[in-house]
Image (cartoon, rainbow, N blue to C red; front, side):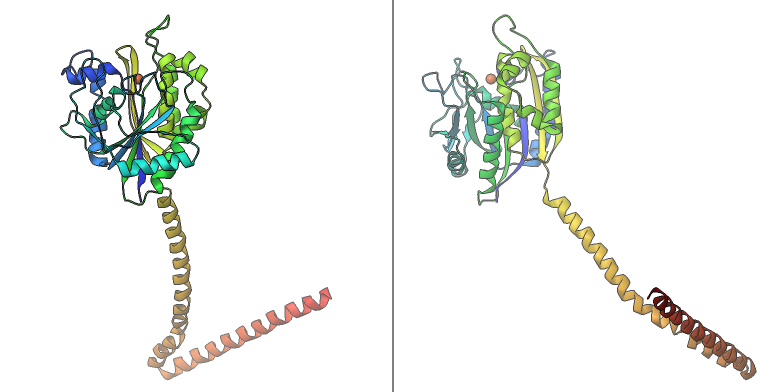
Length: 364
Ligand SMILES: [Fe+2]
């Protein structure tokens, strides 16, 4: 069965792509940001997912304002890098996983998410930059990708909670797919930023940090954040963070943070990268069962050992044997003493038996 094993939240600032493409990653301005990426790339090399479901937004590159699907899914075998005005980025073609993608589309639509099915979809920086951030500059992407595009460009846009529920159905779909696939889910965009108007350039580190913390500590709070709060506190383009909610909703209840990197500024934006792994619920339960079983086994063993004590009681005759080896007179004296002890014990037992009878009689 397919399984979601991890989630990645990742900014997709266009200038980060330009720094990659132009070899500027070690320039003084960019180095502090790019120095935070190798640990995540190392994690990705070790984790080795088969498929990544990348929840991102198109920026008018492939999905124009002529048609605005709230949710769209790419089901093709491959996706070309989009031309965003200065030619397509020179990154590898993104390979799809058509079979799982169609299964996702079917499951999502049956569960009330009316997806726009994209048989052709060029993918822009919203998808390719997170790929570079987590995989580096490579000749071929190390996993297949299913793009899920969310409209956060033109209001009305879906709420964070709506995206969370989208993620829940993504999880349901993945877990009902019969092939053994290791799946990671990306939520891209953000963090706080606004690229136009009077507040252009605004960054809210406090809001961003609380958001990152609560992805693991209190995701229920994040589900309640409304559009107005995103726009007010994280800037007009901070609304992109609703796509992180789809990623987080897909991970289920039990997750732990593996890695985080947050840097300000990246161009005029706060940039973040977070890696979370899902915890296998079955593991602790199995351990608990094993412990319970081991306790039972210990009790059984103890019960089995009890009869073993009986032979220990038989040590008395062994003493007799020892006594037998001694002179006959001494042995006879000990035998008498032993018989006296036995006699007194029998008397004591008889007395102890009589007492409860008297008590019962008294009660009556
Ligand atoms: Fe964006």
